[in-house]
Every structure is written in structure tokens, then in C-alpha cells.
Image: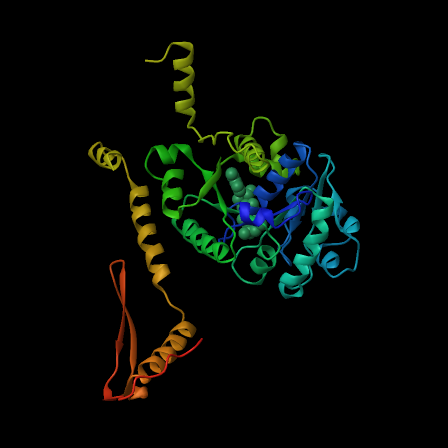
Length: 276
Length: 94
Ligand SMILES: Nc1ncnc2c1ncn2[C@@H]1O[C@H](COP(=O)(O)OP(=O)(O)OP(=O)(O)O)[C@@H](O)[C@H]1O
Ligand SMILES: [Mg+2]
């Protein structure tokens, strides 16, 4: 990481790809939430939907009906970056560059993305790329301009296997990724029916960035388009805020392990002195 | 480990233990997989190298990757027609 960070001039923004290999594990959710959380920390943030033809980040962020230009237009120079970047309605300093819905993935090239990100670095502190599932062209386009990578997986065999593959591909490009384990169900982990984050980290031998539990608020947030990180009672939202803070240099912020309700009450009992 | 054993004893499930074992094996197997392109290239390179020292029947050289429980072996099998008499000159940059 430090190696690739050194390539940039210190005043330029960091390009971070959010990827997973397997589909539906939470890349878009993570991109929207980490992007929003970084902006709340006072950073200038652009989140870019790289899923050409299947755009999603716009609806997750509630910005779907403000789209005029998109990432393909910006990469091909058909519009200015300022025209393609949609300002978030609720969060200051947060911008979305949407995917195009009509084009084919092959319309973008890794070189065009490197060029576009070079421009974006001048305007933003963070550029988060929401990578499409798979390891084909869309992956190449998203990884080529990236300085850093965040790999998302869920505690399931198929997802961890795909994460391993993607981690290998990132290493081959001299990127040392960090891992987020998403959709953790603490009760199942406690019962021995779900891989714990320790298991996942051991199998993948990769640095852990954060842990996010399965949280109904995620669906509620996508229903309404209200950012997850603004929901105070959302465990997942708060986890993403801590992840953003760790990304933003607060490396010694501890990683919180999702707890079962039971162990929460047990702890509370111990604190107030009624625990057995 | 002890945890899993205890759980079995008191009738709790340990499906994650199964998941972890399967994962570890799968990842090892995945990494042993070699693409056809690489195998063809390797075959060519091996033929080239051996041919510097021996007269071989290039057509019947066989290259095989044999797998068993987390290990794999590269097996090269070729009939030798004759040995070359002169030591080949060192070859620069393949
Ligand atoms: N922590 C979570 N708790 C509950 N639901 C979640 C969580 N994370 C993601 N989801 C849900 O899982 C689904 C997939 O999430 P998301 O769209 O972020 O995945 P993705 O990796 O971007 O998918 P794709 O590969 O299709 O782009 C969504 O319906 C989302 O609401
Ligand atoms: Mg997505």
C-alpha cells in the first residue's frame, strides 16, 4: 500500500477500488457508505459506478433522477468532470459519477480510466470505484487506475473463494488489498454455523479493514435513498463509518466485532453489576 | 478446535468447521490449476531444453500434472534416442 501511495504526489487524491469477484456481496453498499462517511469526515469524495450497463450506485444513493452525463462520457471527453459528477443532496462534498446504462463494458478501456482518474485526483481527496462482479473487462477497468483496493466478502465458502482469486489478481498488480467481511450474523457465528472473521482472515491471510453485520437497515436505506451512515441506530452504518475513519488514517481505531444481542445484554449486566 | 469438539459433545452444530476445511482444500486445488496456454508453452520450453542435451522424439514427450491431497507433481516422460556428444554452448536470454 505504502508503495503505491508513494507514486502519487502528496496533494493528489487516493483512488480506491472496491471489489469482490463474487456478485451481490455488498460492493455497492460499501462504496456508497464509505464514500458518505469519508465526506462526513470533511473530505472531498467522488464515488464512481463502474458497472457499465447495470448501474446501481445511483439508486442506492437516491440520485437516480439527476443523471445527465456518466462515466463513459467523462472518460471519452464528451463532457467535463464537473458535468458528470452529481452532488449529493444530503451530504456536503460527496459526488457520484454514474455508470452509463446503455453501453457495453468494452466501451471503456483501462487506459481511459487511468486518464480520467488522473483528472479526478486533482479535484477529490478520495475516488472510490465500485467495481462490477467478475474478473473480466469491468474489473480490469476498475483496477487499472487504483492505488489501493478493498476486497469485500461474506462469510461463505463461495464468496471467500472468489475473494482469494481477486486478492491474487490484485497482488499480481502490486496492490496489497484490505478486507471487509460483510453480512456477518453474530448468532450464527456463535452457534458454529458461520465462518468467523478470524477463520476468513486466516484462510485469506490478508489485512482486515472492518467487519459489518447483516442489518435490515441496509434494505431500508436503499428503499428510501437515505444514506446508511446517517442512520444512528444502524449497526452496519456505524461499522462503515469506522471503516472510513480507519481508511482515512485512524489506523489504530479498533475493529469492532459484531455482537449478538445476548452477549450485549450479558455485557451490560456485567457493567451494571447484575451479571452472574 | 476444542470449541468444535465441545460443540459436538453437547450437540451443537459445527457446519462452519466443515466450511473452513472445504475452503482450505479448495483454495489449494484452485492454485494448482494450470491453464492450457501455460502448459503448451512449458511443453515447448522443456522440449527445447532437453533437445540441447539429447536427441529426443519430440512428438512423444509427455507432460503431466498429477494431483493428490494438496500436493501436485509435474511428470515429464520422454524416450531418449541418443545423447549429444558436445556440451551445448550457454544459451542467452530465452
Ligand atoms: N450488511 C448488510 N446487511 C443486509 N443486507 C445487505 C448488507 N450488505 C448488502 N446487503 C444487501 O445485499 C444485496 C447486494 O448488495 P450490493 O448491491 O451492495 O452488492 P454488490 O456486491 O454491489 O452486488 P453486484 O455484484 O450485483 O454489484 C443488496 O440487496 C443489499 O441491500
Ligand atoms: Mg454493485
